[in-house]
Length: 400
Image (cartoon, rainbow, N blue to C red; front, top):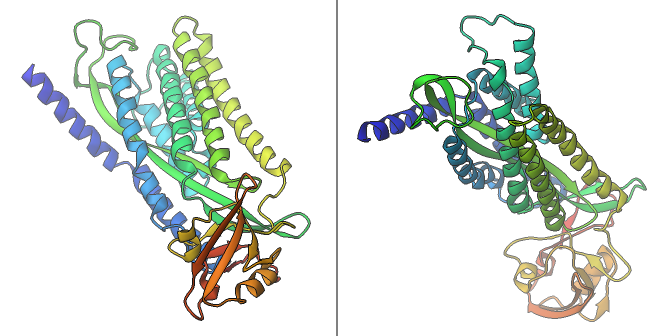
């Protein structure tokens, strides 16, 4: 027993080393660093200040996804699911292509895994002879079944990560409406690392007690390898606060993953359901993305100045507005007793009292909140509210 534990520890260490040698990991790190730098540059150009930390994307990459990956690895190993090393090569190449071409939206397991499975099956079906350095192709019986189960599990991870992480610290931006007006919007771009420890044929590990592995075909010995799966998400929200919109999108992906996983497991009793699992995942994920995009376009632009007040697009952390508890999506209706409807009226009312300001704010429910705060002399312009400015400067805003 002690020797068996040592063997597993050794295999886990070698498997983790394999992940460190996978170029997907380093491409993902480079991608999130570049994404963070570009976002901060855009914020400073549009908002005249940085709002969200440049490390947000990097923290997301090495955050919750790693814990989810550990949990999913335990499920996969307990079930004895075995994956061919050829498939790992193909899926890694597709992830690397998505990162290099900056197609974060395409880095969904529901899109990449069916493509990888199809490519692997095509190699097998046409009896393609691979170079000597390439891994051997698996037997047809084990070609797509275990892959479809892993796809369902990773799709669940995607939905969970979208629900819990993608809506946090979204970046404010300004866009032009089709009518040429300026409106506020919120942008999120995330990559998550979900490392999976997978069993591949040919190694020093053996099946245990006659029942493990469960989903293998034939008699194999195994090696343990960690694969750095990278899941991506990108969205611009213009019609509502981003958190509830993104949370709902994530929940829909979770429901899709449940259906896909059920079909994948049922495929062991009716093999044609494997194809159904891949089809439902691929078509369903595209449908959910197009549905969300259509909703954003159809619902109009919410973050624009209105008759009732000036729209708060964002609040600079640590400023008086932040300490007063003003948040995105609220309307500043009065300042120092004067009604405000645009940037010019906002500044005029704010300058009425240079050392103190009284605000009337309409919250998300349309209820009025009264608040006041002392300001330093000559710093009335540092209240800290990002609003849609009226001056014709392309894709920029003032921080009031």
